[in-house]
Amino acid sequence: MKSSVEAQQAKEIVFDYTSFLSVLCHHRPTLWDAFKVVLPALEFSWGRSSGSGASKTERLRNQALKVLSTHTSDVNNLVRLLRLARMEQISELDIRLPYSLDQDQLDLITEKAECEIQEVGNNGEQLHIRLMVP
Image (cartoon, rainbow, N blue to C red):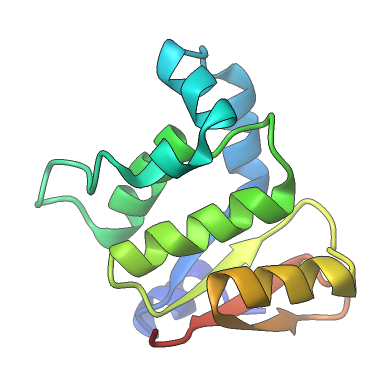
């Protein structure tokens, strides 16, 4: 498993989904959050976050706070995250999970997000994802 320093040197983005879920649990829901759950198509209508001086990692995290929800499945959240990454022109990223996903879940993410997924390590709790060019 790569350290965060090695990942940065390789120009990869590391997204810690485990800690992100913790932040989401403490996030106070808004009316917009309720709309996102009911109408997922609205999730990307606001475009990229402001603040062009922010790093790709910061922009991805800020957008994810707006789009991801603890009220949807991990598969849907990860598909949304990968779509956000594509919008931020991120072609590869590592995602740390609280637990491994089963093969059906990985296949669904691969199909919906148009990506290649490789499990890092033996426990499947870290994924290396390469987004395919559409």
